[in-house]
Length: 397
Image: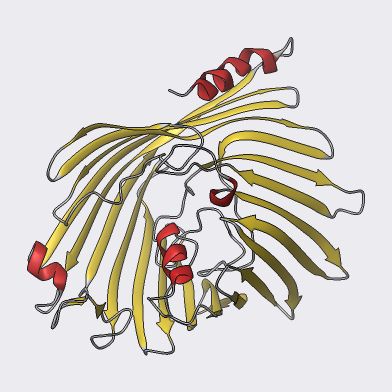
């Protein structure tokens, strides 16, 4: 445990002061299974066989303390994994974060047990001001599947369980003006993985102004992220019974200046006695899909860039089959390949505290395309997948 974490925990009784403490405790357990098939010419087939099964059991404990305007928030996770895929290279770690709050308890060839703190922050909120420091989540921008203005841990466009976003260590500030407009600032502190030192060119400093202009809302973003200057503007407004949104983000790197643009339209309606809502989104990425581009590769590895192509179209419709059951067909379509990922996601409430989430995933496209399977660098072998299934039970308490 780093000394900074000890100091953060010691602040709790200090922040409480003489006011009465209000506490909240809850959490969930989740059991998840992910099955994946691989075609015969896939590199994964050669290394892992024709199919794989990954299972995860997790426990999350959320604990919150409030006293006056002060807040202490935490979330503990215990995660056990069993995997038939190649490795556990994707296990969470805090090598690049300010605080070391993740620890692998046990790791084998095809299993791992770890625990971590996904939230750990202290904060103060007044009538017009919010200050928070520690591990927390931040979401900016108007994107649905693709969110270029979301600079810190954006969700993968194909993510199925999006209940909690991974936390990062930051100082967050917000000031609310009398007009209703507000300005937000975030300083995400990161370390150099090789040296362990906090470095400016690994961190993110960002300021976003959110305001109202008539019936429309707008955002203006200025940031320095991983040593690059980022400028962004966004807007959202109602059009008839729909909501239209758009974000434009420019990133100035040592190699060039790149532009990302996303726009979407969301609408809700009733059909055949069923409540329905849907959205369609276009995303443009000026990085151009060149996998030899160092800027592209760096952003893909950091999770800042959502896909290697230039033009994407996504669409989904949420159908309320019954008060307890929903279906959501989704398509992510690379317009340049062309190739696509088709998803059918369903949720079902099994009780007051028990839910079921599942998805059928079908990649469509020829070899050499993003969803059909990119070239692996080995002749005749592709990074391709066939049909995949996702199933998860969650119990809340």
